Image (cartoon, rainbow, N blue to C red; front, top):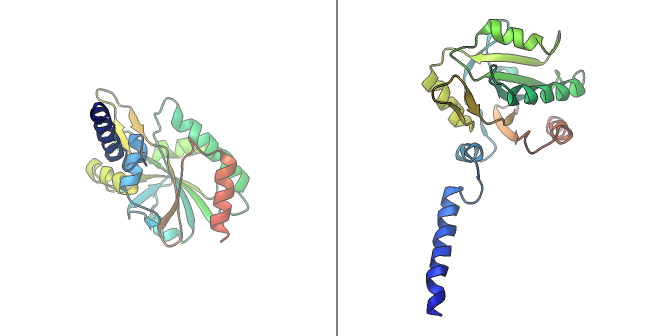
Amino acid sequence: MKRFLPPLAALVICVVVLWAWTDGFRAFTVFSYALNQAGPLPRAFPDAVFVNQDGATFHLQDKKKFVLVNFVYLDCPDVCHKINNRLEGIYRKLAGGIIPADLELLTISFDLQRDDVRKIKSYKQLFGEGLSGWTFALPEGMTQESFDQFLRTLGVWARRVPGTALINHSIYQFLVAPNGEIVKVFDPAREDDRQIIEELKSWVQK
């Protein structure tokens, strides 16, 4: 029996360390860890001022409807644009129905250093004219430090790659209810568009 004690003790120690490291077996990436650290749902979407592609400032809470929020790194070489292309597909399937009457989309830029209103407006135009109910925006009046704190409070992980201008980040989408609370977080890496559309309809039509 004694010969089994050291490996058993080692196993227990490993399990305890893994439990602590993964936030109770809930987070196995830096992305999910940051999301879990932000707290359970529903929780308040942190208040902030944004400026849209036309130069108008707004608070998300002013919209008084459901808003699906995602973030984009405009100089991303790959994944951001794939996610927004998928988001366009979701938009097209819901436009004229629950969008824009009951739901809007809000895409926020990560890059305070290189993005501006002109750039986000040009990016929006890539998805076609109109797009009523889909806003592209930048944080207004935030320092990099305050924006980083905003992202942490929200549960978004974002880091610049040292020595480059690249930004690594999570790709979660946050559904914010008319009362300003985050009620659902979508992970496009794990959920397909059909699932997301059905859940959006379910929340909006409750």
